[in-house]
Length: 304
Image (cartoon, rainbow, N blue to C red; front, side, top):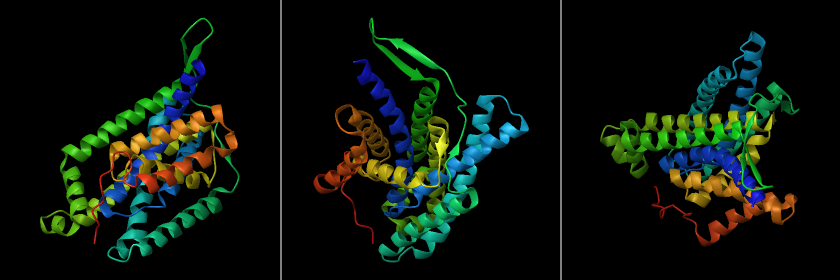
């Protein structure tokens, strides 16, 4: 029982990463009906900016860990959002109205460009970071059963839930959210009614990139090592999470992320660890075959 609960906590933590990245996929798809395959690499850039930020604050002598985390989080979100904005302006906006294959190829090209850009500027070796957040809570479940929840796991889950609630409020209750929903339903009509469609789409890319930056910083702190290739696998799994939950649905993206995290966490208890990724991508295949709209998705309205 304690192993089950421990894996549950680990799965929720892992699912939080995927959920935050999947939100970026689902927001972009929801508003322009296309998959941003460079989004995983935006997450990777967020992780590298976080690592550089922590190292710089260590050099200048910032000793308070909470202050360092908050400042690095703000810096990482800002610069990663700039990358997200640039991806939209370079890879998507000039191709708006083109056949869907064109922006798809453009996004894949942008993904490869970002990977090689980071590889050239930061090197191909893995980059380590010393543990910054230590400590854990030990919950006694029985005479010989204990559950350990690290302080970092608690921070990750609380931060993820807070961001999910904040973005849900923003989408449902603010003028920006109304503009996004209007653009999602009919881009032309939204423009005729006064919505700045270009700005709304750019802001959506920026928001998705900022969420990816949060996931990148948390992954840097949680795993302690990053490299230029982490965005590819994480991006594909987050895309799987978005499809599983119902791409275009914010709660669905988070639900899908948590389920993928659970699958990865519990799989080694019953099967070989080596086939963990096979299980995740097998879920993607099954969802696309039997329920293409995902768990919380709605039937797609074809965008012309």
